[in-house]
Image 1 (cartoon, rainbow, N blue to C red):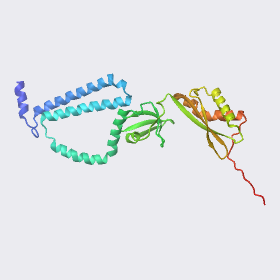
Image 2 (cartoon, helix red, strand yellow; image 1 turned 135 degrees about the horizontal axis):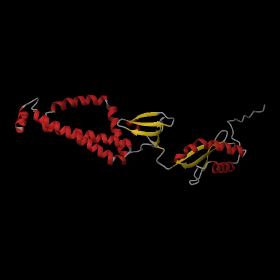
Image 3 (cartoon, rainbow, N blue to C red; image 1 turned 180 degrees about the horizontal axis):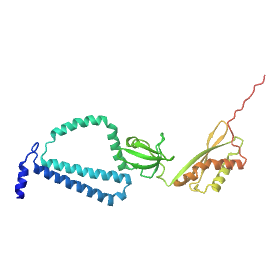
Image 4 (tube, one colour; image 1 turned 60 degrees about the vertical axis):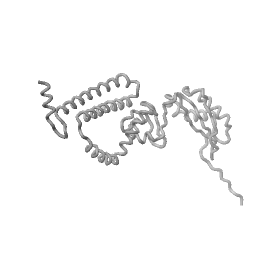
Length: 274
């Protein structure tokens, strides 16, 4: 009875040689493919996703899921004997038209894949793109764009292509960072004495500054009105807020307490005799 029913389904021809039986088998194949795709996705998220950054894990899970669905569809078409040549030709022409219209979309997609593979930065890193106003904490790398929470609390979206082709400065990859500041002293002042005063003040008032590597002091410039001393100090990466914004304040306080002049711009005018 069941055989006769299947035979009757095989005898009912729909379009292009497609029968009810082949359509039924194809539907079963697609259903099994969806089940397998969901199962593999769940297993991936359970056992492998915790080892990857959150955004990369989500994107890889999507690729696995839709890849299995696509493979199931190809098996379905080959099993049913559908002739997709006409559809492929039309799709090719349509794809060319869409390709020209969506070049940026495709480039962002490909750039996103390379970012997930190369992993120049990871979620939670503090980054900066030199030459732009993009600086902050990396939130995620999605299919087409990157989201960065700027240090002022706002969130900026950067297309993957722009992010991938830019120079990316990571502020979190090293456990220590260096902070620089420049302070000027009058030409009449003793340079070695001023440096000694600055070094003592840093050791006394800035506990987050590392003594190894030790602070450096360089003569940066003999400017019009001052001798500019560059101060370079190292500190733990996460303690920048305790060092960077306060370095100049402590430098000025030390020079004021020592009576060392910090000059303002001035000019010397010589008057010729008659």
